[in-house]
Image (cartoon, rainbow, N blue to C red; front, side, top):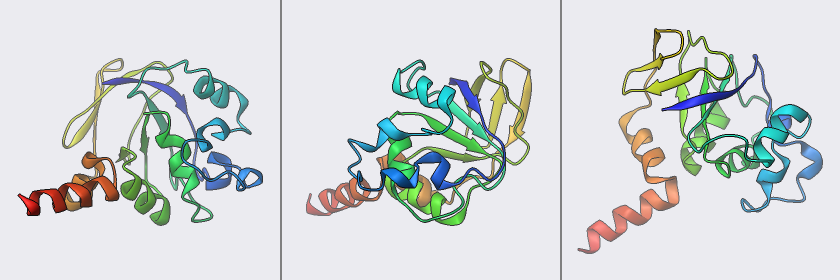
Length: 164
């Protein structure tokens, strides 16, 4: 459960999420300070922590399009937020799975800033508006990686289980 902290439109590129001028900074511990730097109100919400962990950014189609920069995901991962979009660019989606960023594909999502959302296994419930929207679930193997916190923690978990 969380609230919508911001709503974005279609075609939000990795350059909007993590502007290319900051590519000299690639450490996941440092990238969050540059998230959405060119969308000042969203940037300020994030860097000033004016949200609760688990809150949502809602977006339209093709979220994460553009370059394959992994920093676009690590910058968001640093804030413990979730992304619901009508769909995601393929490389961004794979990077988000690899880094454990919670992403939800919801083609018909309708939400406004402040709406309270609940995500179940197969739907997003907008509690504020009293509406439900079907999710396109990740394959169970992809979801397991996200749930583990990313590919490295997932692999570590599997290796530790085999060592028992």
